[in-house]
Length: 282
Image (cartoon, rainbow, N blue to C red; front, side, top):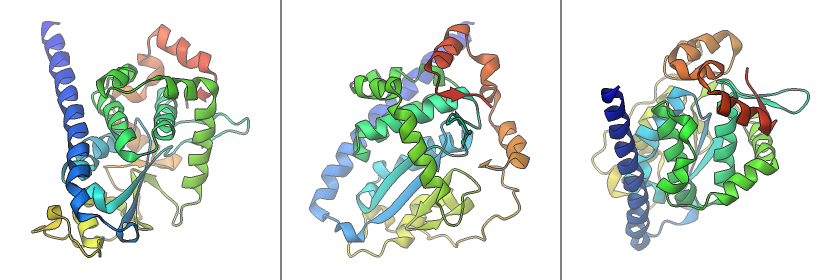
């Protein structure tokens, strides 16, 4: 038991250090980029389509995507987050999420945060914090992120409680449904209109390769640019959560015990999710 508490303390300390680091780097990157102003037409469009409890989405955000803020590459991309993923809409308008009710809650919470703080430098630290908690299996503690990143919880909580977050999720559903080519799994990363498929983990190098602006960021100097691999067409990747039912078992096998939401939610947490009345488990 004592070892468990020690691990929790270490995890909490690491999370705090990571959040402080991301916030500090956001400020630093912003300040550093101001002398080399990047024309808006030179910026790359980067969109991440994801779902909150897919372990591979968590991993990508926590261990890869944050580096854009750490190394200043955020100055050459317009980053958009789309928290919906492989969810489905039933005929009565309710949303069913791949990894259960908690995933619907967190997708909606993150959608509300993005709406409440539209600048990516404002909402990314909060999303990063929530995803880091899910990465550690502590997603039920997501509300601690308001204090950890020092933001007012009211706009997000009001958005969620009012049902507006549900409307935002329906908008994200329309966006991912309109993708061409269609997404087949998450994380689904699109760079300047082109899906990266399973190359998404090479995001830093691929951004540098795609950037054609007049001022190459320092982070791109000396990088070995990747050779784009063929796209996956056989549903045989082990680092994604597949959309189709036939491949869902593959994703669930990687989602650790947290995908079994009904088994691990406490009675209080289950009641809270049920009372919201906007989400259902698979």
